[in-house]
Length: 246
Image (cartoon, rainbow, N blue to C red):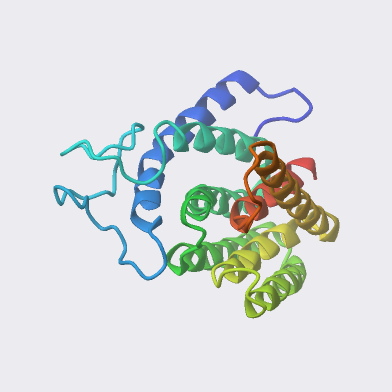
């Protein structure tokens, strides 16, 4: 963890976090390539041109075999993963650090997938939810704070229920509610104020993005059809921002 008071050797920790983020970006880019496919299509298990696996991809996003571009754009996942790793190093404190790191890692992949194809696959959101639940439980036992788990559960249920209602109303996709359960449980560890701050930040960021897209369409004299805002990246960014601020 980075010492917010300035007592820790900040530069080595930041450098180490950046390196961890860049290393993690390799498999994360593969996850984006695998799951960033439109609804109804099979997962991209291999390059459609040469059949080579997409588990590990270089920063260019091109298949090592045939050079076809797959998944996220070139040099996009890497800086995001590095920045998130630095943020986690700054915010992580105590046994809950593992849960935060797990959510941050899968959150990077989910954010890129949702931004690209407007979906949050269960194959990523369910492991995210399960991992957060297990790691927070271990953290509570390790730190001697079992009383924090009911609050985590209540926040998770509250956030997940709100998003599930939006799913029923067809305002969101089905993958948003498990993401809400996971992020709600994680934010619940840090307190109700942090959880509310994370949700508020997510709503504000998503609203600003919608306004900017509408304004850009008007400036370019194009009709403002459906804004189709990907909610996942803003939920993730809002949660991380709230944890950092808390």
